[in-house]
Image (tube, rainbow, N blue to C red; front, side, top):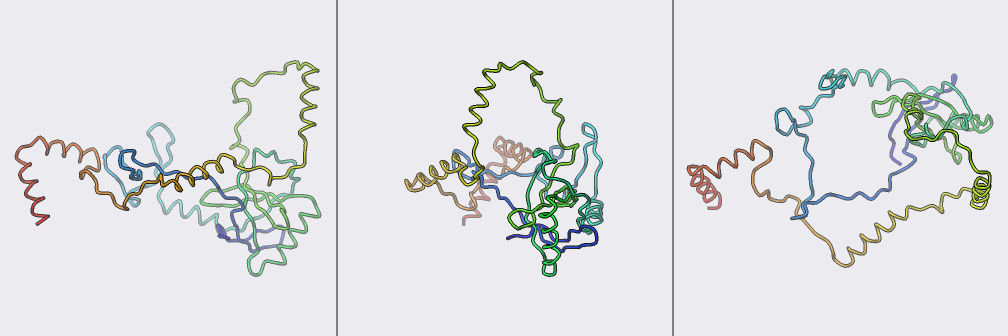
Length: 274
């Protein structure tokens, strides 16, 4: 299982060297976009709107837009320094709370925690402590340059860290439009609704819930493959012209309307093929 973070987690004076592994995976079927005419995959380029040209990764800096078209540029060294200052710290459990006290709206992503080579005993101690107390630990961690609030709990004999949103990241319900105010509910309707809920109540068995759309989509894909309804393209399709941006397009248009450049272009093509 791939390690996404390596460090340590502590509670009190107990320090546990651990590794972080993604506990979930996205099963979405990714579809590529092709040009309808020749079925060549569509690529996306980073283009500077001011210079009207494509830019490379080394030509890009990060900035914060504090007002419309006004930015504070942040140097890579400054961001790396901030990252190092925080990432080098161990994850410390700062509080213990009950799981039911945290509304599910706060939960974001789950990670399995595994002990590093020397952390087995301390790992077992924390796991047993959480099981016996019925509590979960609240901690902070930096993952991919973002500080995260997280909880540590036990799931099937394994410690799980779940990142959760900070309170200011959860929008206020008062901003949700068209929420009806307290209205009288007809008792007969409520009784019928409660009866329906009672009839549909069962134990939660996650295995019985499946992604029916994904299954149907894969069946369609396999059916089209079996029927040879496929298209193929070479790795590098020759471009119809050397037009790569707006300036090249304008220049190409001028070349086509210039009688002096037409013969020269033909001579070059003949010279290349000879």
